[in-house]
Image (cartoon, rainbow, N blue to C red):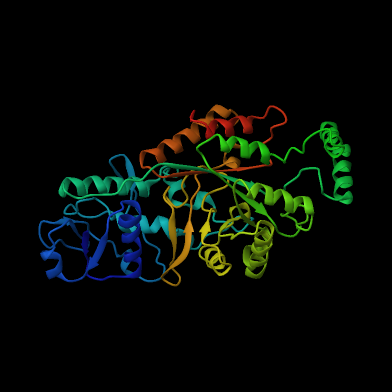
Length: 430
């Protein structure tokens, strides 16, 4: 057991200590405010205060973990062994910055509580983030810091024992629309055909005709191919289906459609299936509960995972609503148009709500890359290079590498660069 001495035990401090040591380093940790207990402890121990007691392993504490509410802290970036860091400490400190406060700042999404202008979908803009501004978005800095903390502790305490983590990779598949042409109703079909015709999109018109007459598979119906691919791969996939009502940003076919229900159930027989929360449910807990209930009725099993449409997260309300709707895992933590680590980590974590100073029972699974973040690359070799760079960073710290794709870009009926990329990613080639 590792013992941490501090002058005050707060919910924030308890949360981040348990996450760093129990979850990430897999070692038991206890906190104490009693000097006599700390001195008597014969195992590894850390002093987390303003001044060291003796010649022990000391990390000078920043005030962040002992506060309540939100303050606009001044943050200056420093470089520690080629890794960006902040909340600098004194020379007496074993590590030149407060690794616990800095980790809490990123994982809690502290900066998203601060005043900022949201984008057109109500999201926190990536360009407002500390990581983007200081060019460390594509590094899981929290995991790197904790890895270096582990090495420093091993040097100080040669007999200390940590658990071993393993690298994991998961593909997250968004299913906002189950079919491109089929089962969309006569009015939507005629409307789509008219748009193709007036836009001189004759190739789309032909595809639509061939699909509707049964001579060609619907391009969005890729589920058999994906199931087969993942059956022969070590990389699992999670499918998130949109079950919401038709609206401006939610254009799936009706959940009443028997083919729709059958397809969702069929995918659930071979893979993990869960809910893509509709755009309309963003601030509507009643609607979110209704969509979850619909999916439960489709697949006849519990639905505990959630992804929000367009990666819409309003900190902390989105997670409170998700918990209220009885979800316990989220896969929305990431950016749509930039690759990287929104929370500075590639390790799943339970969300800490600063507004109430409490831990919420929902596990956040951050993703690193969504396919939309690759649109800006004209050359797909550069896109692949970005993915390889991020994956290599995750492999170094034995974290979780999660990527988001969609059935809207994965086509198997003709040569497709997205499909080729996907196949490469779930093979051992990347």
